[in-house]
Image (tube, rainbow, N blue to C red):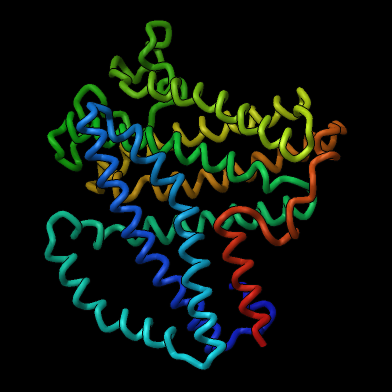
Length: 351
């Protein structure tokens, strides 16, 4: 996509990029899966709920692990490309040769066969949705200094919190229905509750929003996760300001930034309630499909709300925006989408 508008693509560069991406995806998946297994085993031995630990660790380590591996593998293949080697072609050909074998192994494994059948749509759709967030970030970077300092914090924390909630909901449905996909608990079968019911349906004062007397087991965790975002965001915003500028952010900046963060997480938690129950009702395991959608929507919503907050601060003349440093080239940000765009730009300059 980065090459098409400038008509600079060529066969060797495309193979180099594809080979780097394929090897990176394979190794990153293996490393993260291994870490998840270790974390879950340790959490169970320590009598901790893995839903509260494994998902944030996976989300936090995913970007840095992928980028590190991509940089390392790209460097190796780029060096080979300059010396006239054929490692990229060999890697792609080798993957195509072993692909039928691994497809057969996965299809015949009862534990992962469902992922093979239904796991493609969520990942591809999530990539498409997240690309929208990348375009919004690119436009924001062109107009505001320092926006890329806060986008990873905003989107990362939102993805972590909604991942915890989605995992908890899926675990609850597994226990309440004995893992019978397509069947919802009798006293908790409302797929699309009101926002009031989602967050406060378990409180006595809000029984009118509880969906006709049904219980709401996810209200308290949702409120706790909403409150958790405040100390984390305040801490990181102060760290960013003191490191980059040397003084604390203004009240207006903190106010609008926290409102944007709060709205992002509130929207994601409500969508999680709908998406997890809807997927379970139609026979799809939310563990395999819900989190990619939620994290991608979180990137899009978080980036859009952050850009809106910066627009409002600019209209009000907040001094914090003026003093923020220009963080890198306007086309390069510190997230996965921008880093990959930078890699594409570098490869197009090989000749």
